[in-house]
Image (cartoon, rainbow, N blue to C red):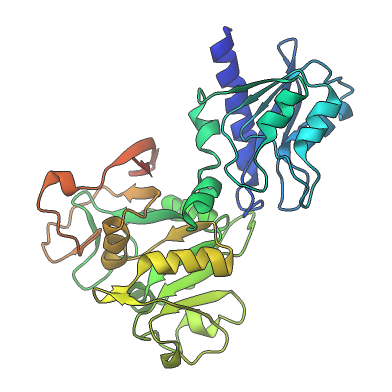
Length: 365
């Protein structure tokens, strides 16, 4: 295996390992690390849980537990080793003390408090290479970096649609467009994100619980977020009635209109008849520590997010059916896109057939 392919192989491996931390490490990033010596993996690790050992120290511990010596080895890691003492001591210190000769990094750490690891390693005589040869490793920390740079959560929009782009009938019936296996995959994602957001229209029409069900592992109980500009949510709805059991956040223009004491409130101004979605997202990150936000909303909310270019990922379940009803609910509405240049474009990351449905996974271009 030539060196570039070898580098990609080991960074891909580190990324796959790191992904195991989804739902357990936030607001920290998912990070994976692989130690290689004489073309053999001698240690592997990932950040397993917020506050626990970082990936580099996990990999070094794994290396030593197997009786291997990391002296003069190469460390492949998905993110620049941290340089500060937080809940854990700096990873740069552990790498230097272990005698690692070379470190290959997929992405620099943009956080002011933890960056600078590359310079510290180089000053200690360690060869450092920064490479984007592994897209999996490079983009793994996107939610963490997005929050640092924008102050907003990473938004994952999820919807199920027909072949003609409809998410509900003209009366609002949407249960169920996608098949049971697709819905099961949605619940597994619910069990890993920080929060799930819907608009009040969806909350009224479906009266949902927005919880992860029938999952083997629920890594975290996602907060529930409802966009309720004018306090239309029924006090007897499942969301309000269970707010003392599942953290529930109501986003509203005038908090005085909302009476429930079990819900948290996010106040945001009204812009063009809707809550200012940018303010909502900023406050969800700052006040409620939300890094990954899954949106299961209707056309107006999705349209608002698209208008402001705030969707980072889209997971679409395409069902093999056609409504052919011009009054059936479209995926997103509310924009003026009179020219093709106004269309928001996404890149297809992967596709998967699930029984007769197709799961399409997109990322913001």
